[in-house]
Amino acid sequence: MSRDLRPPVDILHYEIVQEQASALGRMGRALEQTLTRLREFDAAHALSDTPASLQPARRKLVAEAGQALWMFVVQREATGLRDSRHIMRTYNVPGEVQRCMGLVPVPSKPTSK
Image (cartoon, rainbow, N blue to C red; front, side):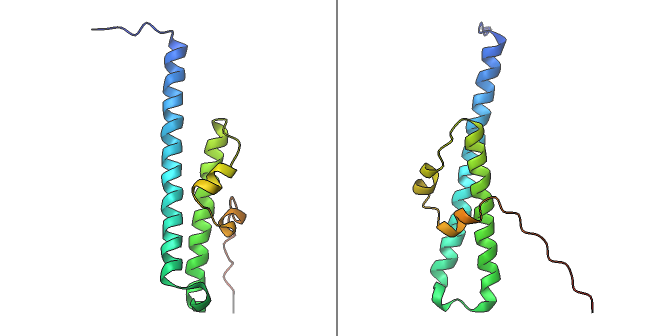
């Protein structure tokens, strides 16, 4: 049985870096998935022809993509990767998704009659 002779702090650092990389991968895949769903929706419904009844569904997809983008950017910044322009270019993030990044929708209050 071989024994790891590295100092415990090095072993811990290695584990932390592995977890950071894993989290970045998960966040990146989540962003890709939400952007894909938005693009598929847009491809199926031309923006100019989208009926008003489908606008809430599209807004929800944009909000989900904005949340996924926010999570990915925060995770990257936590690892020291501060420039998010690379993400915007690489993932081709639409401007409307960038603008809603990090916004949390306020639930609407039910109206009493």
